[in-house]
Amino acid sequence: MPRWPADSRARLASAALELFTERGYSAVTVDDIAERAGVTARTFFRQFRDKEEVLFSDDDLLLPTLLLAIAEPTGPVDAGTLMERALGALAERMEPARDSLRRRQEIIDSDVALTGRELAKQARWQQEISVGLVERGFDPGDAGLLAAIGFALFRRELHAWLADPSADAPSLSERLRTALPAVRTVLDSSTDR
Image (cartoon, rainbow, N blue to C red; front, side):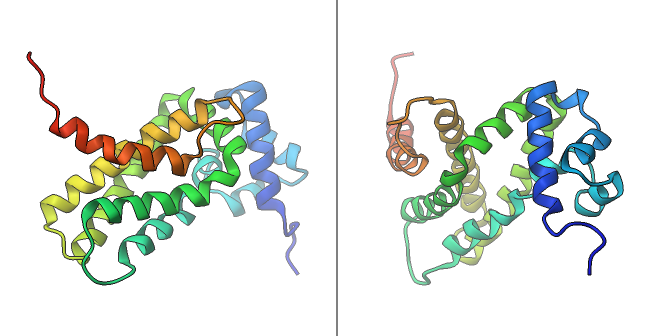
């Protein structure tokens, strides 16, 4: 039998999000989070490496969603279809958590170190996605470019979705389906500059 409550990880994550929202990220300590969650700081460190990880720990549960969408089904598929499937699968996993994701993103955006950690995570993901695309048969240079475009597009639409307060706002999946063809339009556009 564990010496700490079975739900301590979820309680710690919830407490951290509440405290970061109330006081600001830098004003909250691990002891504050543990106290709010009703556990010890030692229990906190059994669950998370540091207080930053509270905001990023669930992200790695999403990466397999992307990799699986890229890997299946086997057989030829064009880059646009593959990107739509992978980003759509990720969006579907994230949509139910919109409110907590919004609060989380506000906290991340308020601290330059957290923003840096988010970008570093995305760079690591982008590299893993590139490998998955190469395994699907894409040229390594093209795979890197597709992964970069995919992440830029997803980040833009995610931030727009989280910032839109209206109840009838398009879902993240809908935003991505609309945005994907726009990439080609932008690439094909010309200007008189």
